[in-house]
Image (cartoon, rainbow, N blue to C red; front, side):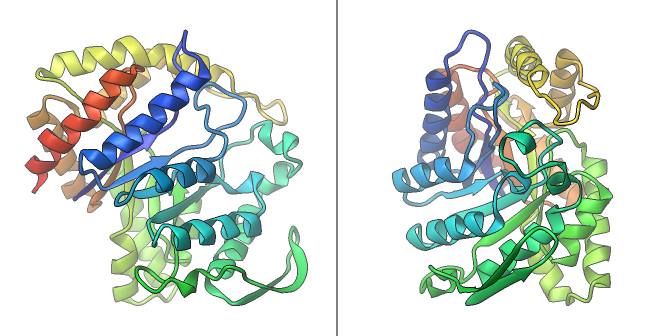
Length: 344
């Protein structure tokens, strides 16, 4: 089982953005020191829910500061980026890090970001498959052209080519954030692993994994290829360790609702559509019940149960739920010292 951290760079009430980003960077550095498998970085625009606007930029910084740990995006929002530019950045990080970079992509939401970056609502509603396929071709082929509804250009050379990596994987690992049957089918048809969100319970994640497998086989991928890709599925969650489970839950219930309320309330839709927002306290309590929040034994048992029910063996766990730098570092260290050994 491979345990990593999920870094939102969440800005809690009363905190500055520099302090928030410092906590994000430190949590990733400590994750390597603690022996964790990976760090997953989110990106958001114009909201304190997460103050990292470029997951690939932060990934580049962390890859330069670490030597062993994998660093991935969870996710880079493809509808607000040009797929070729994102693929070039991916190839660059893949080659210069010795294959330690994972590109996670997703659709994001119908946010004002689409207006600011000029890509428009269609990039979110219908353009994701075209952009994803162009990105994948750039990562796999020596020369690429495009003649689609959104992207059209003459054939050009792929520079740098990620396949030139001698040691490590020849092609950068790519995963897709999936939140609906449609996105599960899209990932399965391309035999790409899924990133499943922290709002989902084990039963829902198990259903999505089963659907993905059926669709991948129906698309003509071999059982071996399907099994290999399925081993890359990632389950996002929340982790908070304490000597007593009640103390771990209390830490999150005290801190997370304030962040969730100010962060989620700041989202603005591009077309004025209404949004149904979760109750921050109820959502925090839900996350505490779904994920490894509690004593090391309780947390390990919950993580093992999720793996057994879903078949997923890779985890991206939000560790900054306390909102405090020192407490976050301690939480990460305890994950490495007290949770991971119980999963062997």
